[in-house]
Length: 86
Image 1: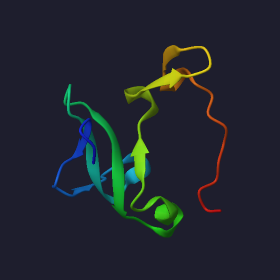
Image 2 (image 1 turned 60 degrees about the vertical axis):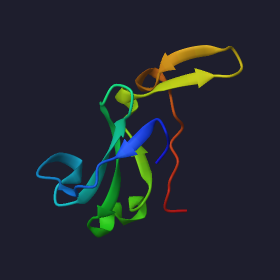
Image 3 (image 1 turned 135 degrees about the vertical axis):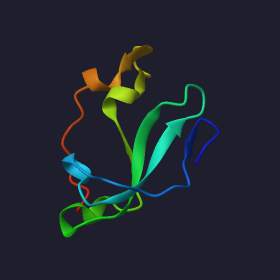
Image 4 (image 1 turned 60 degrees about the horizontal axis):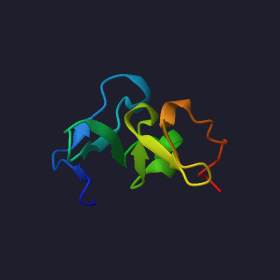
């Protein structure tokens, strides 16, 4: 993916939660080895618009604000709602 984020070649299947029944690849931080997101490979129609996109876990990433040069956890940032279906 990049020099900082890699994906595992093994396809996983969600057994519970939002990814129940979905096949996906996990994304990992190369530095610490933590899972930071996933790439959805197959899903039902309700998540079809996310297939082949890089989806990151907000609690696993940091954001850098250019305007005030601050680093903050993504889970503390208010991201505006955006529909990917459009």
